[in-house]
Every structure is written in C-alpha cells, then in structure tokens.
Image 1 (tube, rainbow, N blue to C red):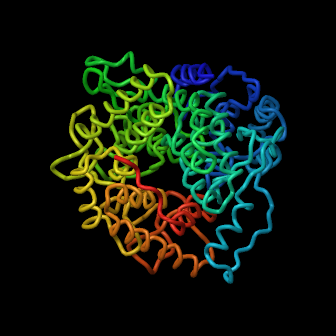
Image 2: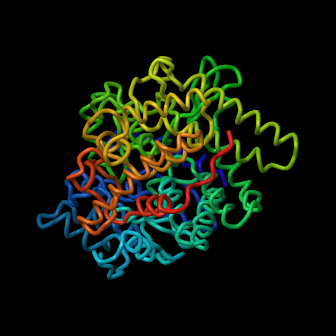
Image 3: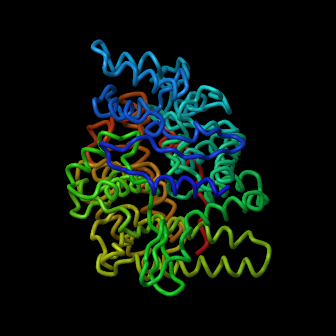
Length: 539
C-alpha cells in the first residue's frame, strides 16, 4: 500500500523542522494491521516532553527513550505533563519512569560460556536473538509488530534491521534454520505490502527511510533452500520495492536532476542516491543531530535530511558523506550517487528480469538492468583511482574518498572484468589489513572508516572476488577475518558488531556508540564463511 509512504512524505515535507521549536507532527494513516498511534514516532507523539528528555540527556543513549513503552495513551501522558511540568517539585526523570516502562528486552538468562567453540556459541545465540511473532502486541510503543518470528542484531538494537537481516540469514541458512529464514522474508514482504517499502527497522521512527535494498538477495537465499518457485512468490514485492526507490523518476530531467532517491544522469539514464523523506533530527539520535546542526551553521532541515539519509545508507557515519572529508557538520549525503546502492538496485532489476514470465516485461526489465550496469561503469568507476567511487552529482566530480562501497559491483556481477581486476589489486595493496579489510583508507573517528572492519563488507568482498576468479585473495580475506573473530571471542567470549582490523591487541573498532554484543550479522557471516564457498555468480 504505497499510499502510506505518500502520506508520510507529505506530512514530513510540510512540517516545521526547526530542532528547537517544532511541535508534534501528525501523520493521519490507518492500515488493517497498524493503528494510527502506532504509526506516529515518539517525537511526534510526545513533542516538548520528548525534546526535554533528549536534550537534557535523561538517558545516556538517545535510543532508550524512543524504545520505552508508554503505560497510557500519548494524549493522557502529555496532558499530565502540561499540568505538572511547571510545578516546584517536578522531576523529569521521575515523570518519565512513572509513565513509561523500560524498552522491552526478553529475559533469556543467557550467559556466555568460554568452553563453547565459536560455532557453538553462535548457534546458542539464535534463540536469544529471536523475537516471536506478535509477542509485543498491545504494548509495543514505537515497535511495529510483525506477523512472523525474526532475529534482532543484539544489544541496543532490539528490533529487526533491514540490511543486517540478509547477513543474519546467511548464518541461519548455514545453521539449517530454514523456517526462520522464510519467516524473515515473509516479514519483509509484509512490510512492503503494508507500507510500500522496507523501513530501516520495525520502529515508527524509521518510517521515513529504508536501508540498502537487499530484499532480492534475501529471496535468493530462500530460493536456494526451497527452489526457484520462491522468486515468483515474491516477484510483486520486489517490483514494489523497486517502485519505491524509483519514485519521482518521471519528474527528473536536465533542469530538475534529483527527486527523492532518483538522480537523472542523461536521457534514459538514471542512478540513485540515499534520501530520507524526513527533515528533522532523528528521534533516536535527537540531541546529537541538534548539536551537529548547530555546529554546521547551515539550514537545519537540509542538514537533518543529510544525517537521516546517511542512516538510510547504513554507513552512519563515514567521512564518505562529508564535504570536507573530516567533520560530520559538513555532511552532504543526498549530493552523492553511491556505487553500493546502485549495485544493489542492479541486482534487484536483474532478478526481476530473470523471473518475469511475460516477454515484453522481461525485455523491459532487462534493458533497465543493463542501462544501470552501463551507468555504473560509466559514471561510478574512476579510471584515475581504479576504484568504484562516490560521485557528487551536483558538481560532476568524484569525492576522492575510497571505501569498501567500491566492492559492491563485483558482489552483484555488474563490474567489467578489467575494472574487477583493478579493484582486486587495490584491495590487496591498500585495504587488506592483518584482521581483514579496512572499511576506508582514512581514520576519522567515525565507525564506518578505518581501522574498523564490518562483517557485511568482508562477505561481499569475498564473494565479489570469487565471482571474478580472484580466489586466492578472497581466501586470504576470509581467513584473516575469521581469525580476528576467533581472537576476540577467545578474549571476551562474545561476537561483536565490528572489529578493528589493524590492531590485533584490541577488542574492536570505535564508533558513535559502545560496542554491541550479539551480534546478528557477525554471527551470520562467520557461520557462512565456515561453510562451503558460495556459487560463483555468472557474469
């Protein structure tokens, strides 16, 4: 039901997004499965109360409050707040604790056991990270209840996340948990049908953005388990997701080059960017975004959208999005056409083309996929640096910031053999470190930069290199990454979300929040890398 997205978009575009003064925003939407209040984010529902809680740092982590569960309706809580906020004995923390329950976290009693092997540890964690279908019905707060079971990453990440889940599914498949893989695909298909796209996560405060589109890859995993009929089963949802990313294409042209996610490059040639439809500070990182906006001295709505759009990319944050390559306050995410997003959309288009039965439609989707493949080669491969690189579409210049986003075209089979060879050489000479691959070639203090390595990027580099015959380098990456995981597990009896790949004396890399335990995609990639190599994607 794509009307939901349109209504959300209109509501957010029409709001006053000044981070200090804006009031609650209303999104008048109803579906069969989600009632009106469930579709409103906490910053909309609780207005001034929300802003005071976040700006006064009542909780160390801004995500805590937006994940809390109200004990009464928002209307009743806000009426009580208005009556009491000016009284002499008013205590904000006490008020919040009296009106909200802590974020729902199932009590599982799990304790890491250092006597387990790393594989045994990972497999023991699946029940801990699994949430049952509808288990929070009626008391979910900002949580969007899903119809089937799902796996969360772990730690502060108490909900399902879109792109994380693909890499988690790889491990579930390797562990023989076929039914849970299907459950998760069904959940994402449900979100596409109900909302028109897959949100960043199943929280109301994520309803303005998606994440890297891995749904066609998820369907591919399920088809590998159940057979090719799976593609036909989810073909309509894949087409709907594509429509979401291409919304506004007909409005673009030489005089209006970018609309929503779509960027016009030339006649009949379109590429995509990350683009969050909201233009106010993120609810889950409200204070941090407000401070960044103040530091920037730029238009508050513009900076907020750039911050939110970087969150849609999953790379929140990396200096790849910064105009000066150093400071978050210079962020320009929507000015950038990235190779990772466009490679994933190529895979989506190619998958739809392969499994569409009507010949005219098959031919149209094939042309669409081939045009994107050619555009990736033409616009996103820098022959000077021999790397697939972010392009600033407003200037027509490459950003000059090299990251592992450049390996995505190899992962999906969209790279030419010559360009794949150039990427392989640079990976070996510049990105390869003792513990795996660096995310970028520059240390900035941002978590999606050196010296950190991330599980999904290791997996995609490994697969991409094998696709083009660079098996020895792929195997080196696999071995170093798994050894790094095993080293950390031996030290602390847990898997973490990211790892320092340069200093083998440390537990993991830095970032904007503490290292999280769990951890869904680390578990998934480790188990899959310990399994037989994947089939080579035909070029």
